[in-house]
Image 1 (cartoon, rainbow, N blue to C red):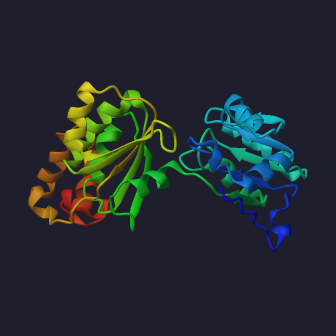
Image 2 (spheres, rainbow, N blue to C red):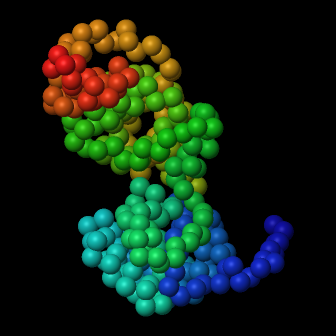
Image 3 (cartoon, helix red, strand yellow):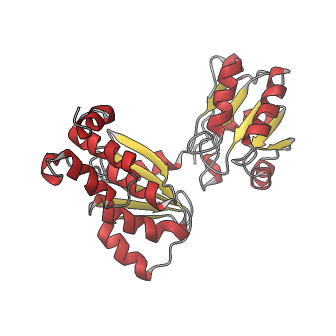
Length: 291
């Protein structure tokens, strides 16, 4: 393989600066995907904030890098975020990494980016792998317009409401899902959004990479026999723009009752019905009161 050396014409822009938070993308599978710039930044920052310090420690050790770590994850993000920002304000540099992919995307890193923005601490990115975009590119579905939805809530009511609201989303949709929740998620997508094309991606860039292009109904049947393994990215075909007026009662009160019969609370049902009818929740509420 030809070894090509790239020379940056402006090396100052790659210099690690004190008081800066670096969002460093890490491989989603293949370690060779860690960029030269990422290795340089990880080698030169004062400390690293990581979702899992053990996993990130092993990654850095593969490249001969040893750095002090600060644990930063969903359940300690408030306390540790303030601590990290205090060190940044004192002039230290920090690299934020997640277990795999781009920090701050469906990740508690978004909170520390917001916190840094509020207090004027510089934040920059060292781009690289992102599971959502990688799966989208592999999906064979429309990529020009897409919506990233991340993990779907496990609350049954909220899940039903969210998927029902997305039924008519015309853009390609991207979801993350854990293996033990995959079957239920596929069942719910079929029930609340209907059958359509879907691509299931797992182990991307790894030896056992699997890309399954199928339909939701076929995926449901497949995983009745097949045991889900590994973290999944689901890329779902967008809905078709339709006249929705034929799907709900013309009477506003009956329209709201339709959603209440599906388990929604009164105000949630009014909100959903208002969206169907193309009016604000307040307008529909006044209509129900006869005003």
